[in-house]
Amino acid sequence: MEISQLAAVGIDAADPRRLGAFYEKLTGWKVARASDHFVALDGGPIWLTIHQIDHHQRPTWPSSQVPKQMHLDFEVNDLDAAQSEAVEAGAVLADTQPRPEAWRVLIDPEGHPFCLCLPIST
Image 1: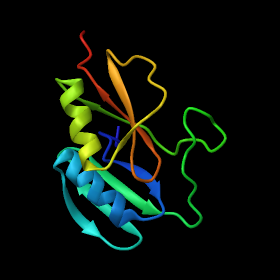
Image 2: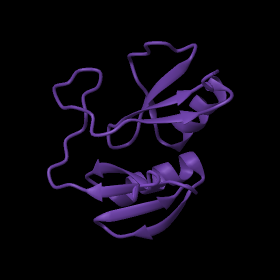
Image 3: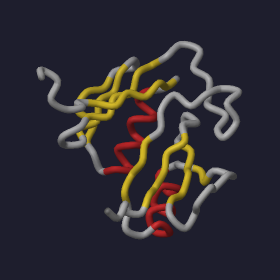
Image 4: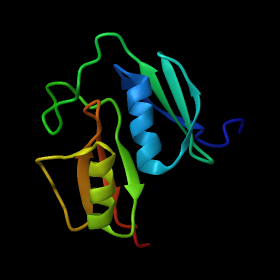
């Protein structure tokens, strides 16, 4: 098969530079390309791309009035420490926390929910 791996995950945003700076601070990945319309962060085997969308609306998660445009899960070893780092980088802890002992839902500066998750045991 010609498709061998997932290359990137794209996120819609009103301000790609601002959101790119947030994810750079959160993950330590480096911004490799940036313009007012597009930012690409190098995450090793996968890229995170951020695309400027006119009239972007913040998701209203957990309500689906304005659906989320993506969802990222980041594996962490310490939920409390990772949550503190994410908030320091500019995230906000979501009001709804379905399973805070296993994962934490946070909201990025453009309103996208993302999770900090303990490793999945196999």
